[in-house]
Length: 181
Image (cartoon, rainbow, N blue to C red):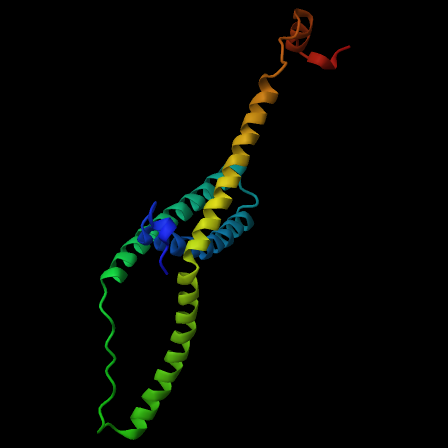
């Protein structure tokens, strides 16, 4: 599928590599969730800092894994663009009929599985631009929302705040603080 609008900004190779990387990040995220669950289950009695460090390490491995997947997809898309069509060799005419039948069963099973996979790949490749565009849209909306939340937090901290008078500062600094009356 030609992406006339998108290819004026980004190459088709980038779009395909990004969409397949997003797909692979889904299963990698599921693996991360399972690892995080195991960490939480096995480290219930460990210090919070130990759990935090282990979970941070798992998240770092996830980011590295997604980055490696992206590089692999980038290289794979280059191979696809330069790849020659496949040539299928059929068995010889003089082959043993029983052996040919058994090979035929395997070929049929493999062909059925490959047809299901090729249907999914064709569907995914057909809508790859939509997938990447929706992901970018959601990422943009979430980024804007996070920026607005950070701006609001800064405003809450800075807006109409004043230094309390000396009486209250001294009272809070004394041992016992506000608990004494």
